[in-house]
Length: 246
Image (cartoon, rainbow, N blue to C red; front, side, top):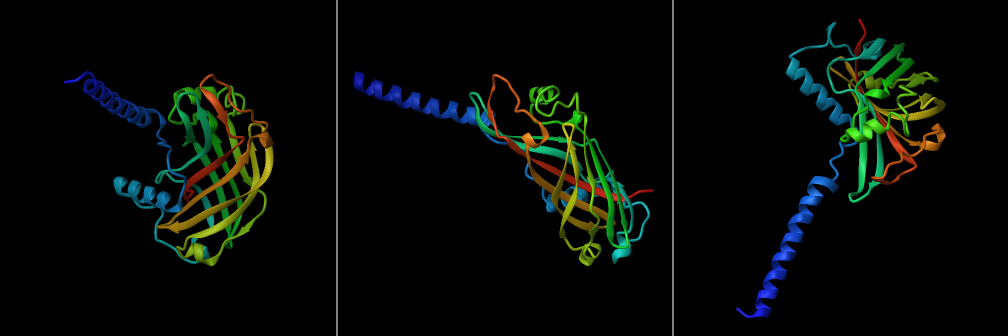
C-alpha cells in the first residue's frame, strides 16, 4: 500500500471518528430535552393516566353539567400533574443554545365559582422547590435571578371576576382571559393570562403561559462562567388539575 493510500485511509478514519464524537457530544450535551410546553391535551392525558393508576374517582360523586356543575370551592387535586414553572432560552459555554425549564409541584390553589362566575382565585407556588435538569442551575437560583432564598413564594390572585362560558361546564375546551396580580421576586404587577380550561369527569383542568420580562420584576440575569447569555424574558407556565374542596 502506497503512502498516499495510507494517508487517505487515515483521513477517512479521522473524519469518521470526528462524526461519531460530534454526534455523541450533541446527544449528551447539546440536544434539547426540555419538557414540552404546557398543553391542555397533555394535562388531560396526565389526569387519565393518574386516575387509571389509582383506580380512583372524584370524591363526591356524580358528574354534573350546566353551570351548577362548576359552582363551588375548588382546590388542587391529587390526581393529574400540576405545577408552576418557567421556560427560558440560554446559551452555555461549550454547549450552545438550550431551553432551561424548571417546575415546582409544591403549589396551593383556592378557587371560588358562583353562578357561573369565577369570583376568586389564588395560586401560590413554593419557588424553593423549583427543579430543572440541572441541580447546579437550581442551586444558583437560590441567590441569583429569582433569588428564591429571599423570595420563596410566587402568587397570582384574581382581581377581576370572569364570567365562564356555558360550554365549559358542558365539557367543552375553552380559552379564558384571567386578570390578576402576579407577585414574583417581591414585585407585584397586574397581568392577564390566557388560560385553556376543560371540565373533565368532575375535574377542572387548566393550563396557561405568559411571557415575563425580567426587568419588570427586578430580576437580574444569572452570572456564571458557564453561562454565556440568557434572554431578558422568559415564559411563566402553569398546569393545574382541580377538584372540589371538601
